[in-house]
Every structure is written in C-alpha cells, then in structure tokens.
Length: 325
Figure 1 (cartoon, rainbow, N blue to C red):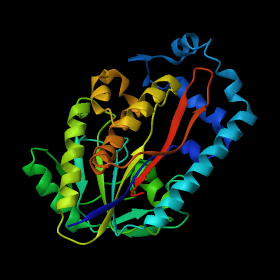
Figure 2: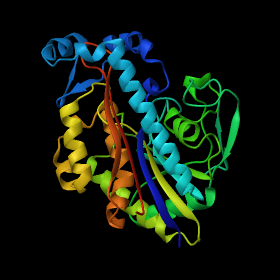
Figure 3: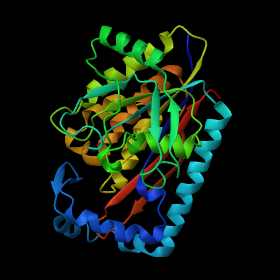
Figure 4: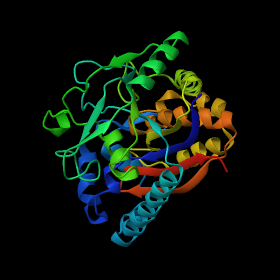
C-alpha cells in the first residue's frame, strides 16, 4: 500500500515573489475589491479602513517592516524546500483551487485532474512558474483510483481530463497559480508525478461547507493509503490563512486549533469567516485530517502577517509541514 511520508500547507501569495517595495502599489487593487471579508461580513475598502483605524496597522507598512517580513517568508520557504528535498516523495497530491483562471463558465465543487501532463511557465507571473515553458508528469493511475474510491465513499467529483485555457495566462494551458507556485517554488520545477485536486473554496454557491471539507479530507487520506503500490506520497495544500484582509487574531485561533487538531472547533466557526482567500483554510484540512490520523504533530515554520494597505489588507502567511519524527 502507498505510504504517506510528508504533509505540507503553505501560501502561494504573489507577495512572496514580489519585492516588498511593490506591496503598497499592489495594495491599490484592494480599494476596488468587492470581496473584503472580515469578521464574518463583507466590507468596502473605506468601511474597513475606518473600522481598523485603531488597530496599529500603519507601523507595519513601513518599508523596513515590510522588508523584514518578506525576509521571514523567504526563510520559511527555504525551510519548506529543504524538508521537501529530505523527504523526496515518489508522488505528490496537491490540493489547491482555481480563481477564475480556468473555470469560467462552470464552477465544480471538487475536481481531480486525470491527464498525463501539467504545463507551467510563461506567461505565468514571476514566482508562480519558471521563465521557460516546462512540462511536468501527472499521475493518472492514482487520480483514477482516487476518483473511484471517493465516489464509493459518497464524495461527488468532477473529472478534469484536460486543462482548460488559463485566462490569466493569455488562454494558454498553463496550470492555475496555486499549483504553479508549489511546482516552481517548492519542487524546483522537478516534481514527481502528481495529482492536482481542485476545491472551489472561493465562489458560491458550490463552495463545500467546512464539514464536507473534513469528510473529503478523511476519504482522500483513506484512498491514498489504499492505493496498491509501494510508492511514497506527499500531500500538499496550496492556500493561505486570512486574506485578502489580514486578521491576526483569527489566524491565531486557527493555529491554536491546528496544533491540537480541534476540527470540531473549526467547524463551528461561521462560514462567513471562510470566505474570499481565507476560504483556503479548507484546503489545509485536506492535509491535516490525515496528519491527525498518523499522529504527527504540526511543525509551524513561521507565521508572518503581511500588510499592504491601511485597511489591513494583505495576507497571514502560514508555513507548516508534517513528517515522521
């Protein structure tokens, strides 16, 4: 049977691969963002700026502070790369999401890619792919096994046979950025055969609620372990903590629950907190449920709240891994 040797959960933010000098300029996009979810509701930028004017955000926007936080993120990513190299799995299962990159006219709740190859490279944004076109090998045998096993367990899925054109990348068949970041930044564009799994955390009405995410995670882990092979497997979640509004208090609650695997506490939190980018916490569950079954403690490499506007927009960057001690 397959043997899980590594779990990872990490962000894929564009802030990780852009100089901190540009963060404030990038923050101007947040002024028009209609998905600024914070404290269980949606805010306009001006409303949020007024609400958070006493939160002490301004000192976190200085270039010195931005640079320090960028360096912490870079150091955390280097640790994640080292851990990946040390555990070098035969196969990777990567759980991420599409952000209206390839799914334009349809929004499947859960999809598994069963094709043979994955494309990355230009015109992907810097940090999400190399500066040349590359082709990675997928793992259709495992992908089809997962679909059959999950369907038998009552999890409805979409099979993604081919990558649709990526509208972020001039309609080329380039992998969505959540996956490109892992292939490029963690695996150095030399990944093992992989199975990309897409969960729609962003867009109603097909967002899996938290408890369904937990059921999916349990079924996924059981299916991986039941795969009849002697190969080693890594399960990697590409997502983030609070964003596009950075909420350090909520992130600390999440991290506390992660340390103790308190999934029931997480499931009791209103779905209004799991919206916009913060919804990617559900992707992290796809790794954590299995790690809890293995009894492996979380290794929190770092948590770095990164800000880009006075309204507190930005991202809580959490870098975590699990392996046999």
